[in-house]
Each structure stands twice: as structure tokens, then as C-alpha cells.
Length: 159
Image (cartoon, rainbow, N blue to C red):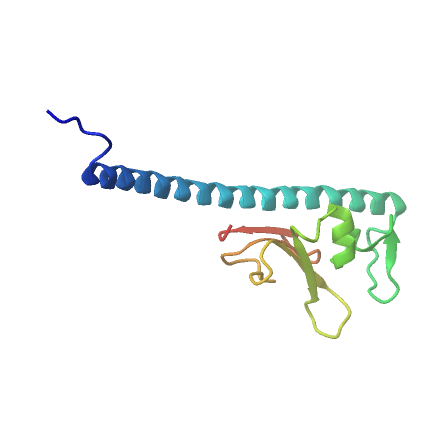
């Protein structure tokens, strides 16, 4: 009687098939975890932004400037320009307020009424190709709109 040394071709194919199914399942779970982590990070940014603008508003109220809003002669509180006590959505101000690393998160803003040097909206997001200034849609970002309600909008549908 001869002894068998090693595996047959059929056994190897079955083992590879089992490994393929297990790795495909693991990849799907890993991608879902990454999306959950990004969504969690976006919600953390929104919470930190809320805390930061509340602190600026409190300092504006203490200084008695929470009713002032002039985009030409700006009111400054703690090195932040404010309108009605809330920080204006300037890129540098939000980066300082949130201590954002530019390699991880991006911040951009725009004037809602072009050429008016007035109301601004800021978007804080991960992906350089996917952002919006609208408070709805499948994006992974935080929208800061200081002149509107709600001021902070979290879009996590595409995280």
C-alpha cells in the first residue's frame, strides 16, 4: 500500500474557495468599519464645532457685541470675526477653532450671495471631490451656516 503525501488537487481547490469566501466577508466588514469611523469623525467634528461656536458666542455676549453684524467693519472676539455673536465661516478661523489637520480634513467656504462680502457657508469634508453647500444629500461632511437654522448640518450618507 502506498501512502499519500500532500493534498489532492480537489482538496486544494476547496481550501482556496473557503479562504476566498472568508476573505470576501472580512473585506466587506472592514469597509463598513471604515465608513462608520468616517461618520463618527464627522459627528465629532460637528460636536467640536458646536462647542467652539458656543464659546465664541458666550464671549460675544460678555463683550456685548452679540447683536452686531457688519461684514465691512468686522467685529472681532478672541481673534475671530463674528456676526451676531457667531464666528463668520472663514476657512482659517474654522481651522484654528477646530485644530484641523489639512491632510485629513478640508475646509472651504463661499459667499451665499456672490460679490456681497456677506453671509458665508463653510463645508468641512474628507474627500476633495465630494462636497456640497446644500444642507442635504449623500455626502460625508459638516456644513456650517452661521446665518441659518440649523447652523450645523451633518451629512453622513456617503461616509
